[in-house]
Length: 208
Image 1 (cartoon, rainbow, N blue to C red):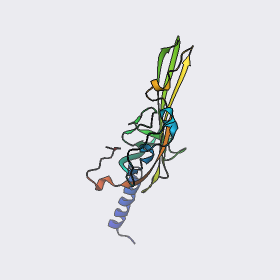
Image 2 (cartoon, one colour):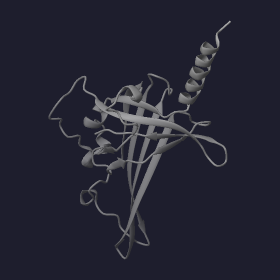
Image 3 (cartoon, helix red, strand yellow):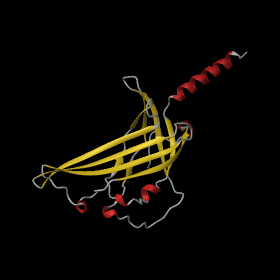
Image 4 (tube, one colour):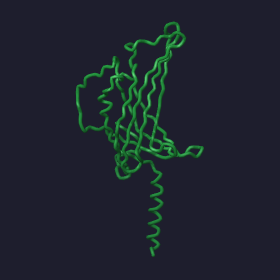
């Protein structure tokens, strides 16, 4: 029969494990940015021309730190939040992709899948009417699980659209800085770290 000190220790360990189960999870992440650095889809570039690469790389990865934690909304539904620091990409001649916000996932519907979107629109006079130019950027992080050694994919999607209103005429492609749409998928592998044992780590997302 366990002694009282042993029972007390077991209770403390059980409580600690339960508490840590809901603590933020900090991951060290290695991303293979080859699909971003070497885009091969001609539709991502003006005139459908892929620039000739001036370098080649192998076995090089970008190192980042991400944090995931659980939450509950006012209606009682479970959610998760991802802090992945600042994500900034330029995919060919498509609009700039830039996110530094927290991204939410509905844990009961799409656990481990975090999708954020930003839409920027501008209206300018043209041809007696107006022209509406829209840049839509979407970023999706998909984990296979949120255990100790997950892997997954970072999907980056950048879209440009132009619509003429009341006789407005969209400008020629060459007159627009980023008139194309482009999408790439970046694979990653991660490892959960115990920041309590590593003094220099901070429990926040970062990639600089």
